[in-house]
Each structure stands twice: as structure tokens, then as C-alpha cells.
Image (cartoon, rainbow, N blue to C red; front, side, top):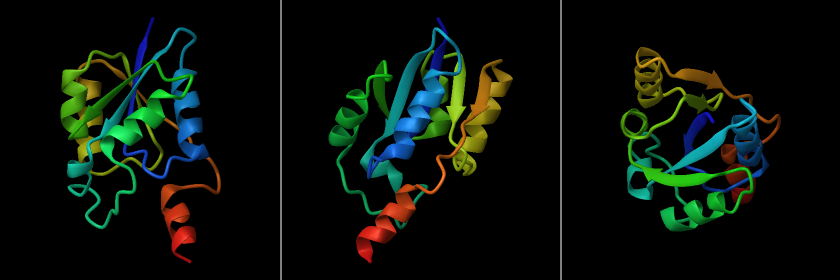
Length: 135
């Protein structure tokens, strides 16, 4: 069994998040999917303008309710969580490319872990949902 790790905020949970989890789970036939949810108080470190709708506990509970998710953990910094958890494949979203992700990907590559870029679900994003709610 291969352990697949994907990480994110997962606030304003939407169809695109579900598809990310399904893609990550489908990377290999025997995948065990670990989803790391970023703790609320650390989100502003990489997204200073973020307005968080759900608490860490609520976001964790939402993610844990998804059938294809095997385990949910929380994290503060993506560059650190990849050093702490035991996993084989790091599944990274198409838009996850800030400095912390660059460091995490480099670490994974140096440790011989596979890095897989996941595809975006067309026409959906947390940013567009937030904008629609504000209009």
C-alpha cells in the first residue's frame, strides 16, 4: 500500500476539492490517502488577505467525512509536514506553488518521494466562490 499525502486549507469546501481527493486517491490502486488541513492561525502566513470561514475543527471534520479520505491531520507549514509524516507520494494541487510548496517538493524529491501534480477542476475555485458570494 502506498501512502499519498495532499495538503490544503479546504475552506469553502467545493466540488474541486472533492475531485482533488479523488485524483490523489487514484494515483495508485492501493492508495491510502492522507489529507493535511492547514490550521487556521497559520493560513495568513501564505495568504495574508484570507478570510477564513470555517474553523480548523470544522474543516477537518468536513474532509474526514469524504469517503475516499483515509486519514486527516492538521499542519502549520507545508515545508514541515512533509518532514514529519510517513508517506510515499506527495500530491500537489495545480495552483499550490508558493515558497513553502517549493521547499516541500524539493525535500520530497531529495528523499526519493514521488511528487504528482494534480489537475484543476475547470471553472471552480475557492477564490471564484468567495467572489460570487461577495457580489
